[in-house]
Image (cartoon, rainbow, N blue to C red; front, side):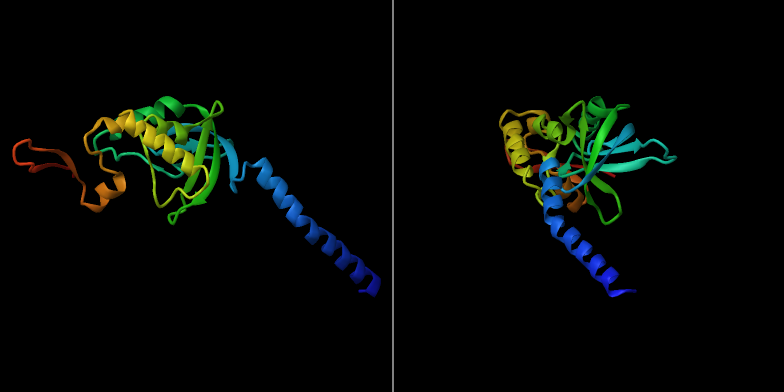
Length: 195
């Protein structure tokens, strides 16, 4: 290859490489500081409060999507079915925008879901149907979600109407048992066990 062609190629490459920081800044500003990618899909089923299954145009199979940064009670837990119904009321059968923010070990997407301009993850937290997960919600907006969770707890909305709601990650760790109440006289714990 002639030296002029190599020099021209390298100088073009140098110009392109110098513009990457500008491109990155534009992408971050336009994307609200989130580093994810998004797509439109129709919600076809809701297995539980923090998981939806969607079809995208041209796909033949359902795609499972975990709602990023939140954890709803499991179906066997108190408020598990209510959380699932709350999610279904927000997105069931609707066209949604899915912004993928993480991919889990199992390959499932963790996403923020928006329907009609409203953030579904945030709504579930503010209505008291989900916890902000302390380990898996790491984006700056998670601080706002934690404030909404504290407000829901103070106002006793959703699962916060229970005396001592048990976070799903603790419930899974304890072998699927949940404290229902303590007896007034002896303060003995009364547990509910799930299969």
